[in-house]
Length: 540
Image (tube, rainbow, N blue to C red; front, top):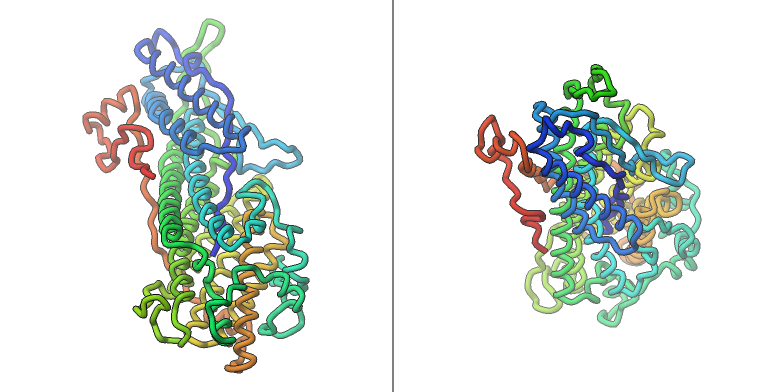
């Protein structure tokens, strides 16, 4: 299975000088921290600018820049909230919003807001996006290893998240034509023939057949060749490759869980603090008269990037991809076990050692994948809570919407494989045919290029499996293929496996809040571990 994490575009920001916002006489002891905050923010701005204009992305450098800046941000937030810091001008920062809709402009909107909480939230979001992109990078590296191993790198020739769509990239000949819709705007690729017909023409199946399923020299009979078409890509990878992929997927899952923790902190702590923030007291200058400041505006008046429902959707997506990485890791092992088992069904022995094959069952993997689909459903429901849907990036909405169908189809593939191992060929053909149709529809119509690419690849694998199983069923087993409605009733409920990793807030670098955390006084959160240096615990 191929994971499809959303490729977040990291925000950029304009310059800010914090010293200009505070009264120099009233805050004399804080001039150095304010200068440091300006400097560290400038470093972050430079790192984000370089990332934007470079083809080679150094996510670790950005993560370090964010984590170096955050203790100063927390010091500013605490100092302004408890009026320890006295303002002459309310802090106003500008961030380029990456989840907000572009509309007719080719540039993402730059939105200015007056609030230190706006600054803190966007800095934390940048950290979360960076962790997500690091995880995506690792996940794609695994996929690329598989594609190189089977000689099929053309499928992802455009690279990960560069905007290249798979439409027209050799799909016209291999995906065939489709006319049937699933009722939700997706063309399912089912023609008037039976659900178990094998799908497509002989020409299209031949064109779609990859090197993945052409390796037959290890088998000694026609039946053996048919039964050994599952997971052969592992035969092109040595144990060191597979161990490396296992480590990359484990690390990616951990990064996704950490990103979920950052987003959760924004939702549970920072946005409520912004909503409840008292009017900021501003010291009048010679040219100004003292005016009362309004309380923070309604959340719906803010950019969608910093609204609770949208940030909550990021939590669901991060957890979904963390689970997907775990399932993918187990499914690679399952594919390896399926590829090397003896030709006699149910023997439970390997071709190399004669020992038992140890793997996670496809049935359990299917339940976990349904859980991934359900997380995408929750994310989509959260996005629907935004009053004006047009304010959300159309590509982001398309990714979340199509992700539901994509992971549901992957679950159906795994259920088909579970049925295949139980020698229930009719059920296997049914599940795989429905999944194949969904992959075809997504590959042809999805506006989310990352999912379109993955769906095109998964379509080819599903199509080849259907063709192989159909031959067995037509010549040996003659089982009835269940209808789509019957298969729907066989779909299991989802299961969860991983939890959000709580974000460990850094100690404010100055002010009364720093002293309180140092001494554990004033109700400081003893459950929050202190970070002594950037990237602590991030060992690779």
